[in-house]
Amino acid sequence: MPSLKELSKNADLFTGGHRACSGCAGPIVIKQVLSVAGPQTIASLSTGCMEVVSTIYPYTAWNIPYIHVAFETAASALSGVEAAYQVLRRKGKVKGKWNLIAFSGDGGTYDIGFQGLSGAVERGHDFLYVCYNNEAYMNTGIQRSSATPRGAHTTTSPAGTVIPGKKQFHKNLVEVIAAHGAPYVAQAIPSNWADFTRKVRKALDTEGPTVIDILAPCPLGWRYPSNKTIEVARLAVECKFWPLYEVENGKYKLNYRPRKEVPVEEWLRLQGRFAHLFTPENEHIIKEIQEGVDRRWESLLEKCG
Amino acid sequence: MALSSWKELPIGTIITEPGNAREFKTGDWRSQRPIWDSEKCIHCLFCFIYCPDSSIKVNEEGKMTGIDLDYCKGCGICAEECPKEAIHMEIEKR
Image (cartoon, rainbow over all chains, first blue to last red; front, side):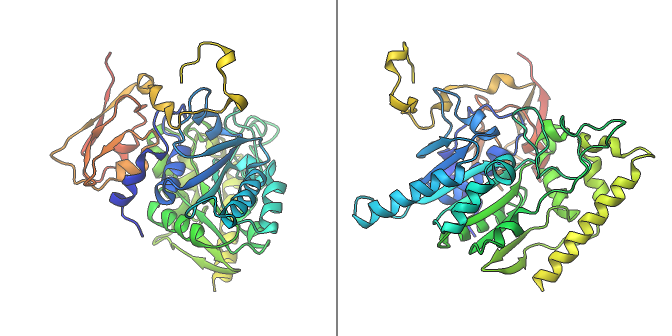
């Protein structure tokens, strides 16, 4: 595992001056990935928060070769880059090893870019796909996605007299991609940088398509003060809403087991998007969310053996 | 990348200077300013790894040397995550 001192050597690969909201977790994720990957990296980024804030023409915060592509094509565009890279390498026109990394938000991964990602994983291109998951379409003003958790208020699942926030549970992307037979899939969190950077290193060293789904708290959409980003992320893991695990060639491994029981209610309470659940008529939803989290945790433990 | 007319746009409107967002100072967004106490700092670099705006200055020996107020948006994550309370936030006065 690299130390923070070593990681700080690659600090300038994603520069300041990007226009992300104060306290956004997206740039933290990109910075942590690039600090491991180093300057020999090519990135593709689909439309989403990070594209909108990091490449406002004529500025770019990326200090590496970078391509911006349409919403659904982070994985398919990088498939083309990878095919070209393999040919050029065979002909001896490219020296050394380059890391190919696709970035996309949860909208561009779980929903709109899903077929592109599924196809790229099936074809077996050698790249890493990082989904910075802020659990809704944040840059267009907080619309629900299939990564939005049960009960969350968004502008397209508004909490009110008709519905109490989103009615469905979120999709489990890691298991979906693992079912494709990808050699390495993992779930991570920016608050545990040691675990995340180890996973990025492992994914880059693995041949074939690798996917990391990382939760990226959003102060604006989740409605919490901007200085609490890392704390909110940490609590998502502690309450078992977002377990840290990896799937290597179909083998599940739990990377972190919370030491004490933390009810999911504590995590929900930090965020304004769940504020409507703390009323007598909606309290049963908190219980439902807890049951859902417990069910997924038990099933994960079973798979981890 | 200063462009005086559309005729100078590169084909594909590519950006030819990587990392030129540095020219755009986001420090003026700030409503709170982080104050760093070098006496209390143990150079654990947690502030560096959690800073969204690449505003923590680290030298070649891996020691923190200060906060780059050109880009800091004053989110306060560094002050929140510092294990030694070596950073605190103050209301920004201009």
